[in-house]
Length: 327
Image (cartoon, rainbow, N blue to C red):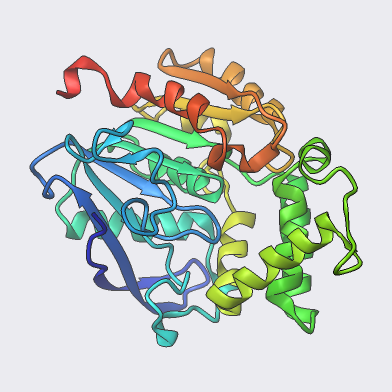
């Protein structure tokens, strides 16, 4: 089911005026390009373009006869530049501070032009991937029929910026930067209630550590084995800089120009992208735009619920990806 990793080569000039050669890798799944409606999926911070098939991180959602049905749609997934998925060291981006989320959306837009894609049935993404979905919609307000940001927002809040800054400090100063940064991040991706339900202060006597400590060590070491430091710094920078109003006025001015049907999916217990921020977005935008909806996943598991509460997520997405007119 997994497709071959393909590349688009381009040169991109950032706002500070630095030109960087970009190798943008991507994968296609399902129907051949230009023969079916196209769904673009944006990955989260340590994710990649391999959304379905062997090793696919979103297999419960994407695939044959799944909610995003590869018998019906063409699925396109770009790798955020510099995420290291192609295993080519020269494609990592060391000057990560020159880039923002807006730059990544512009790079995606250039690639879509090169692929001769002028219309997307949907753009969907979780976490930073949802932020990039917002950024692309603001940049190309007529491009996307359905905009589906999940566990995300149109901007990085002060809370999120603060935690990204802590992540950056860990990445730049720790003796084991990937391990320590991942452990800190995992505590934000879940909730105290989720930890209690999973661990309940269990002490692993053979290791003389609490189960929660062992779990954090595991996730830190797993990421250290599969990810690269430069990639983490770049992804963290993208997460920190989401802001569709950066060059264009206030949120309502920008968002009301987006022609998409906007389906916000929030999580009641998310400590990273707070549900209240999403509800405020919905209320503010609904006064100016009819085609905006919001759904809320109920979970104790916090931000990671979009990768855990699949039954709820499927029920929400079915209204978008299984309407009669798609078939």
